[in-house]
Image 1: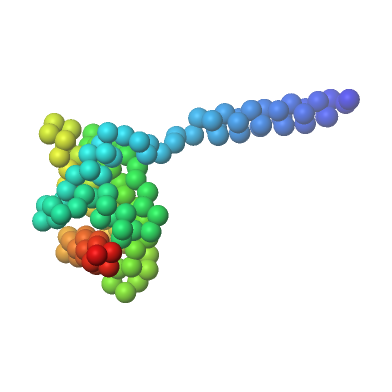
Image 2: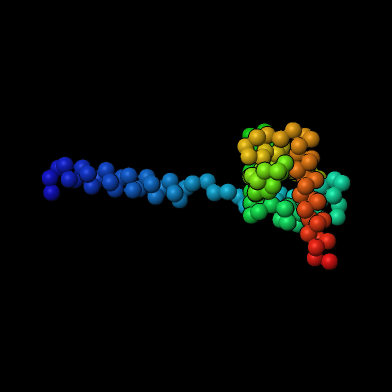
Length: 141
């Protein structure tokens, strides 16, 4: 083999090594965490009839839960999924902030189709989630 071919093989091997290293060291989403369980098994104020998990599992299509620690040090549980809101089908993301001292949480921020929702819109969307759960419960009775 010529020097050029050796150089090509070397570059190819180095590139493949970097690619394999990147794939195996890529940061994975944390989807199994004690803070996720706190939120899933907990209740939002004014909605003590059903756990957060059950309500959102009924209302969101393919709900996805993940945990991360924010740069501010807060423990954040993020729930995302598809839902119909204000007559539009779209993707919603809701962030819960968990207080590690007393393992309580609150709904913090919410987006729908990449637009940040106001407090009123967030409360409306959460209300829709729980109304959906109630309507499905009535349908099964």
